[in-house]
Length: 172
Image (cartoon, rainbow, N blue to C red):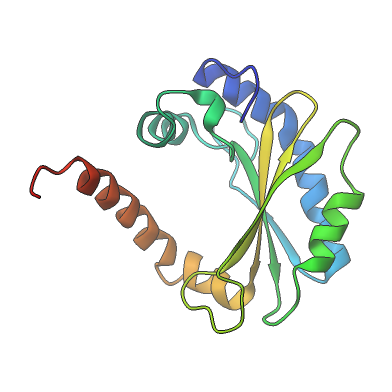
């Protein structure tokens, strides 16, 4: 949760304050783990790797019950590891490189157990001293290719839309 983000403008402002620091954390962790760093594309409004206003407004409306403080990925980056590399070095490097007042508030490992199928990644949510939260995704290069270059993320976006409409359906 983004403490103090009572409006979309405030959430964007807090994310902008944290974007450069998160980029340093991601770059350092990628280097320490032998991976590659990639930040979210710079938003036209902020000029930083923050979620766009339209994406923030959509997420607040559709996923966060109208509360901007619930958007936890306002700024983000990705660490891309070679297939079969462990995320543990990247996580350790993130922990060691946190600025004063920041902490890891969530570590979510999605489908990473042996034999798991489907999308896999590790998400690290970092809360900064100003109350903002940034997200670091740790993913292997094979999964990243499927997500970003072969339509995986587009499928996720479609599924998210369909799920919203399914839960509102009166068919059953």
